[in-house]
Image (cartoon, rainbow, N blue to C red; front, side, top):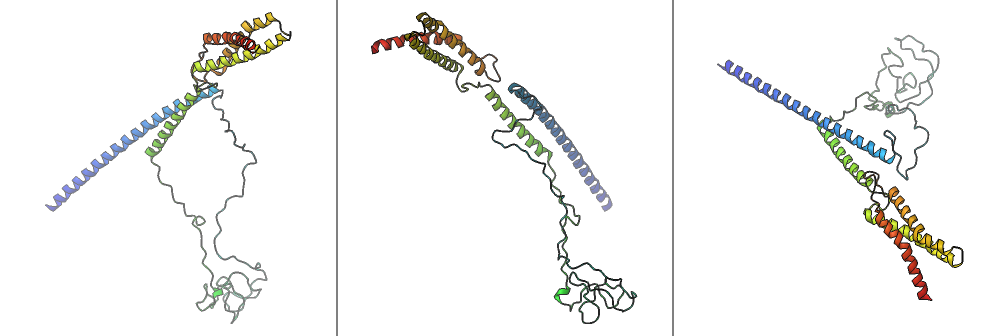
Length: 322
């Protein structure tokens, strides 16, 4: 009976695991579909932003694919390419090995005999044999005389501090240990960051379009106020020229007919044409309306009335002063 109960419990456990696996697979597939849809949406947005930037670049005279000029005030980047010595692994830490190179005649004597080793003494790190024989305090190590019964590979416990060599510390990079791997990147987090950057790019593009819709001449003014200011500026210049011609006619340089002709028709017409051209050149936004409003009737009234009225005011002032 217990065997059947255990079998039934195992079958239920397997069924539960199967359903959990199916649900996990369905959730993973749904998440993948959502990520694919988000990627496609961001791809369309980036394409639209690229087209908008190309359009704005063509409007301001920059061809697509041309690198943007550096900002004003930044020094130019020039000079030879950056170079340096090759990067190598850090050396092993430990006491340096000093002393002259080992040289001398070959070692005499059979390996298994107790005959002394001939040749100059070895100089170097602590623990190397200084000489052979009793009373020296060291036998030269196992590599100096292989096979000798009285030679050991390590220093004796009773030896001095100079016979003890420091342990060698080897770094993990030099030992070939792989570095710790970076954490796994979450695709949903990366897509959310990409969406935020796309929103920021759209906001800056809208600000650029708003700035491009403003003309270079008096951008914060209304079109009518801009036209009035331009026509009045040209009319004021015409009034100054008219006063110069009046003074010239007083000394006989300019005749009276020429003065009246320029005062009633020439100077006002020049003022009207100059204001018209300035509004058409600097009063037009980079993006938006192709032909900005120039208000020709208003310009005609201002230009053709300002010069004669200024001349009449000059005559009244001159007679009042007399």
